[in-house]
Image 1: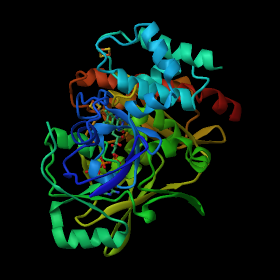
Image 2 (image 1 turned 45 degrees about the vertical axis):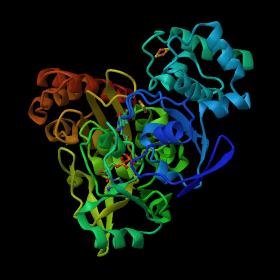
Image 3 (image 1 turned 180 degrees about the horizontal axis):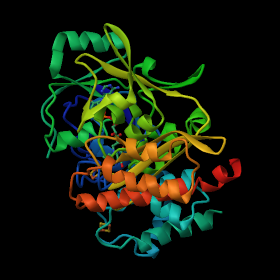
Length: 152
Length: 288
Ligand SMILES: Cc1cc2nc3c(=O)[nH]c(=O)nc-3n(C[C@H](O)[C@H](O)[C@H](O)COP(=O)(O)OP(=O)(O)OC[C@H]3O[C@@H](n4cnc5c(N)ncnc54)[C@H](O)[C@@H]3O)c2cc1C
Ligand code: FES
Ligand code: FES
């Protein structure tokens, strides 16, 4: 039995030790915004926040999260923290099929929060662990850069 | 693939670890950051009976200066290594290695203890540990045992830990030295195709105790003895650097892998040697 906070709500559940955080969120809690892509740490589609820091949800055991605070793309969107970033994603067509988008936004939010002066090269570096098979990345980097500039 | 069936237990003290080993023996697998272990579970490369989570054990945390040694707890995450002031001051090579390791989300969880224990030949921290002449502190019910990093990585993904032992810390001797790391990887954050962690001192214009450690080119981190001898006691010049590069033919016999053939890897090692050592040419010449 684990008790944790997900997007500000307290949740208690029995979890099988073989459940990773993304399956827990998607299958047990119905929060399908976080995506499971490769499920071995390579693609970044599963990026969520645990205790304020971004992690690969597919490389975290749900059973290990007793007492943790988890924020998913649903919680981040509802908080309004990245409304401007999301508007810039739409404006620049930085989401096409959208599979990578929740992970991209979670990772980009990390840049907005911690690296306010990030250069274009630093944005690319920070996003380098998040794969996108559609956009070619240019529009994504543009959207993050525009958001950073507008916030300065 | 989904993970195999297994049990999970959270240890909150070293005593819990010893009790789990006593009760369940070899079916216990230590879980630290999980950034390698959980990825291998997805491939069913390992099927542990029980995962023993050590991340809540306070004795495995913390970075402290103890006399002439910087002691880094096994649970120190890559992200912490990169920003810790003591590390930046006394073992800057480790901080410099961090941006080369994986990606931010992985660096937020992966630990130095896990990286050393896993002993990936292409990993940065094992090579840095050998370059800095670090000591791995292992513990078991019998107490602590100190293993020089140069003897710790015994073979491909193999380490010198005995059954029932875990890594509790790594100790870095503090000495004024030049140290740098560089690597060639296909994409930022990938494991290196070839890399070099180097440390040395310069005394009266001559190289003292050079340690050139290559990664991604062998069955573990490779301390290049012949290349080091080519530098030892000589001024650092274009000639001595060329001699070190030439000596790599003796030192390195890289297995061919999916990145390419041996000779390509040896070529990359020579390129990295020049990149790292050339950057130190001026201070040496000034000291001479
Ligand atoms: C996509 C991706 C890219 C990566 N790229 C790189 C890279 O470029 N360079 C790099 O170096 N690493 C890379 N890594 C691996 C990462 O650095 C891991 O964090 C690290 O190798 C293992 O640390 P961990 O704490 O996650 O260990 P875990 O995954 O928890 O454990 C790894 C192994 O070590 C054992 N272990 C862990 N802690 C201890 C201990 N204290 N005592 C004894 N045994 C222990 C475990 O039983 C297990 O066998 C990458 C990982 C991923 C998923
Ligand atoms: S699903 Fe986690 S990194 Fe791909
Ligand atoms: S928009 Fe399709 S993968 Fe990125």
